[in-house]
Image (tube, rainbow, N blue to C red; front, side, top):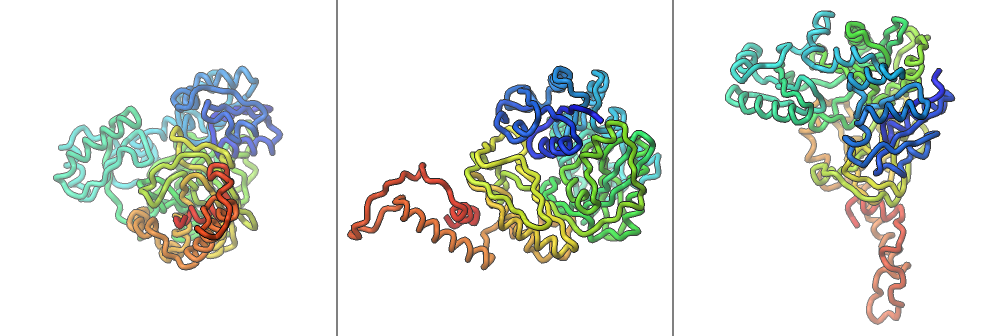
Length: 511
């Protein structure tokens, strides 16, 4: 086992890795930008080193500097978390060439799965089903039109080098394909430095289901079941769960075997995820492989009873997996909500500021993976995800109820957050039935982000607003009615500390 690991990330995933290392008896080195000097992950690590100014391009993305810090502090390995440098083959290779261990897959596996077109060719050769489409980037609009007409509209244009919805366009008519191709290419070039775009048949109303895989250096490769990731906005996941209501034990076994075949074809080692589209008829199609730990890994950990991050570290240290495939059967249900610094009622615009008050949920089956605390300053330099709220329960119905209770307990005051949006999803009848697809959220967005009309929420918020008014009068922050003889205000509004009631009133829009 390693004695010291450098964590090349920030926020909640940096804390997650640090905690895994602490339980393994491994010391940690945190890196941080000037904007993160007081962040929790800096304080929790055994050592912390400043690596640059706030922009990630000058700090967290400077791979050579991170490697130099690892060597200088005596770290033997680097854990990249997710995002940033986690899927950069050149960084994995540079870490290896520096005599360090990259806690993730080999650079060659990252390269094999890094290009969607190359990955398609690789998995097709391994017998993995893919969405019908071309295996190489299209040359021009004429070629794109010819391919599209051979499959029939609608079709989907996708950037070969990226993900997250960048460089992706749905085309429903032939007269739109030239403009869509040009637009997708521009976006792909700006996002990934590569304007290659390929085309595939657009599957109407599918689910997004992914399979977690784990592979060691001794030839053992296994899957850990599926995660349902269909609640998405603009191709970004917002809520994930495990298992999926649409996956039977038989289908789980087939999809799992397919994911294992894809991983073996790429020479994969460590934790990774194969993403699939699952249509209404139970047919599934390989999309891509994420060659890193996923944001949503906790739901798999809770239903499978395994610490995936610890096993990433153990595998990188040379340990063999002591499990058999039969050991992994989901137990209960887990749901994860991504808590972001966005205002759902205002088009999910980013929200910045200082977190003045933070109250975290607790109780049976509740887990909080966060990178914030009261006093944290939320800016625009990084991804808006603040934390992940995860629950585990014996059944899906109870998991939804538990998540609703946990969201009601959560208070984040000082910035806007996605908390109220997640509450509405938990209360949505279609979501409760599991009747969702990757288009579901976009179709329901107006209902889930409009004015809150839930009677119980309005009642609680009205009570909160009344109590806030009472607090302000008691503190002298509100002028007393004329002729009452009451004293003038003695406490300035800026000096007042926010209360939980004030936070609730603001969150529900009744302040």
